[in-house]
Length: 319
Length: 319
Figure 1: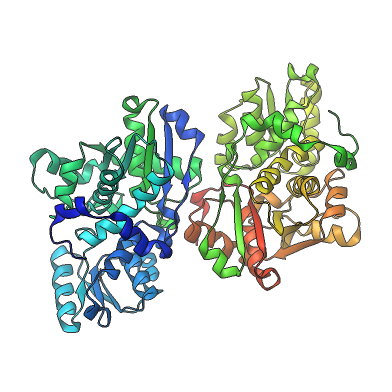
Figure 2: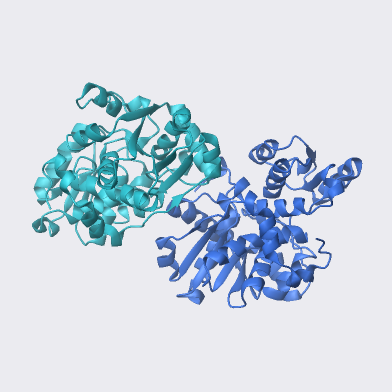
């Protein structure tokens, strides 16, 4: 399969994507919490991708992307640049499928993230912590080893892999009115839109984004891809910008992106860890924060929240 | 109902206990984790009482106990001594049922535990951090206010309340070969035995206990209630001793108690938090530690693990 045209997903059978990667995935549980239902006056369903292999939805993306590369590259390997969940996910997916995997990581990547990748591949290449250095180093290593490059979010196979999350969610909960997805690089929310489009027009996808990195919010208003001037948010998974492949999908299907402050994210994280007893990373807390902030607009509705991941360093936490 | 004779449970209909408190409870989810199945070469089912109201199974105990006190006391109130989950659970159950609740707490109780109780009652009475001081203060306040005393574990209504946990567990997973329960005061494992006895003789209850507070292990061998000389374990919920009501039940039904070291508890806690992404307290980690240590004896079996609670202070964690 080849999806050069980002809008061609309408014709795709996402069930075939699901079938392709299903046996490697955990069909993650959907949990309910009375505490949140009472707090928000609605029925809230948590899709727990923090329980997915490698601790995030990115494993779906990595699996589908790596299974979709041309056969000739399967012998040579893949490369990505990521300091976080996509690096972890791709290294495991590659290891599972016996494909070589190279990860370009900024030198300031926390040790616990590096350790997660080292379990599956020794090919970690450090670079200076700038976007330019990342891209330069990735191109260099890619050319030297003739590798296939996989972008963490702006890649149609990545997006289709992500769509299996909302696919499962909706299969189990046919009556959802809304699904809230965090917005970082845009891969998860675009995949969620594709699943929504496949199943029904009756539920809506809502984006949730930190105010400090509100590129998607501004992009929807201006109609072109805006970038973030700073990456100053605790939600480390959401610091990246939208891309040319996922933005048109988001633009077509997402009517609303809700912004939340750092304090609101921390309060939500505190609730999830200390009241709900789920280990999630701050990016997951962003969607609950958005619901709590706007709860008056969602009274008595059925809300699905995607807990996108659970990779958090406890030693860095201070409440 | 009045259960003065601790062995009379054989004739009890525990379904009536379940019906009495069911509407106040969360039927907590049972989760599976591929990671643990692979690690232990068996099928492991996690009953997540960390998701129960007040973050532990103790809410079952507190509800049933407080609903079983004589009517005349319902106007005056109840009292217990506890620094932990029973204090939290009883104060909420009392608040739910509009009954006054007094909690005697050692002066060295961590702030986060005190805060949990203060949400539901202002009647916290501090005492010196010794068992004698606790008991003395409890008696004093009880007499002064004519209150009904509820022991956190050595009380038949507490034990019957706890039995609803294994009841739900077994209702959902009829084919379990073993249920692992932590052993502290003995209330949870005794309740688990009662549920087992009600349902079937085909599955066995295994106790899990920290080596540093191995009173139950030694009691099973000697045939009488042994006490702990120190309370030096991270599993703060398991520092207490067995009692005269739960011990005969445990003696009759539990054939094996598995001991684990502090290091094994920490490793297991690390797995649960960082791999499984569940927030549990160290007492919950004790059962997984016992399974991991003895996994060769449980190959291909279906194992139920009770995650007894999730009240942990993240600020105190260091991995």
